[in-house]
Length: 74
Image (cartoon, rainbow, N blue to C red; front, top):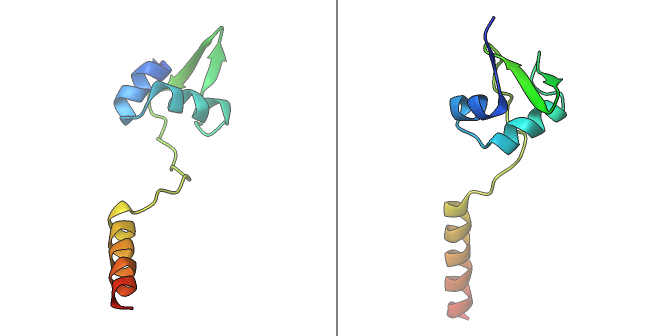
């Protein structure tokens, strides 16, 4: 079996090394283990879903534009 470090997995998954480390610490990457100061991750590990929520900036801009137009009509 092939194993990777957090840096290698970060490149593979297109995320930051710190994000991969956080996922390992939280136990969200199956089979990852700590050896010394390095997280070792199985090569076939799947990238966990990202539970963080992001705002839709385009929708926010649209909503703010509509609100401003309504204020002008007063």
